[in-house]
Image (cartoon, rainbow, N blue to C red):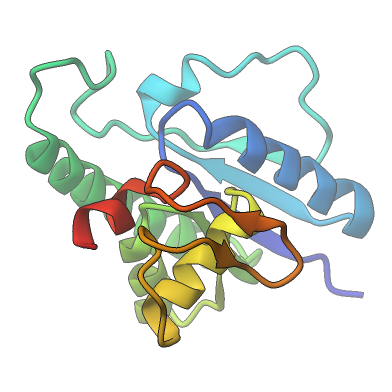
Length: 180
């Protein structure tokens, strides 16, 4: 039987690390897979090493912001550096693993890292988005980008399986509030 090996790439910020780690542990516990957890050094420094399960390894990389992103830092430069160094780290890991005879079978990536899916495609590796936000947010995005919609600001809105949302913009994700 093939042991699946997952490369799990997560955005280096609070709110992304723990859900991604929980998913990694669930993959290991339910499938016996091996998971390599990839994020920046600055985020890796905040991960506790109390109970690392068998099958989980860390592969932190330097994104040029090893002390973390600070207020006043240029976000565009940060995202560019994260993409550049992250893509190199993914490539190095996938190639080294294949050369050792233990290739990765899937790349899982979190929000804000769509470039990692592109890297997986270039490396002929299946890829999957790990959605770590509430399902209601996913539903809001889906309806916003794919369905004709009433003005979300002026009328209450009924999402499938949810209570009716009150009118007003406070319940909407910021990317949608900016564009309405």
